[in-house]
Length: 183
Figure 1: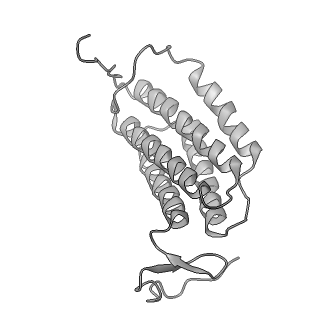
Figure 2: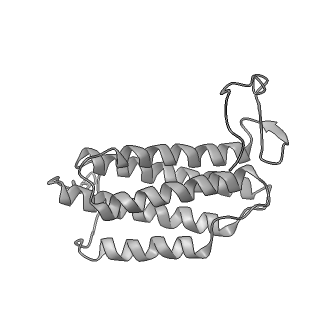
């Protein structure tokens, strides 16, 4: 077990810096902090989905397991050179994605975010996941990152989209298909 937090504020970040897991101090707006901060934000969005009472045990348990992996990813990003996200984590997302997508009707157009509160929260998590992926790409311009982390986030955003569709259908919502201007 790591250090126990007995005092939440330390005042060490008052100068606009934060400490990485290595002890190094970096600016709070550095690409690395932006990356793990966005992963944290994604985890919070998934928590919103989990707060919904209409989740199946498959989706609820899966999202909770994903939250643990996202904490792992945040820790990986806070310690440069550390790799925690594995190919099997991405493969697990793909298997779940295939399972959940099997009974959904094919799409020919984009779906507008919404449908039910849980589906809308899942769409929000998907959008934040895409931003987390972009933040990792930005970090990769200057530092080495675990390529599996990028694959994991890419697959997770796909999974969150499929979950939003499943949640909409199982909760009695309606998917609204985008109507492009002029259609």
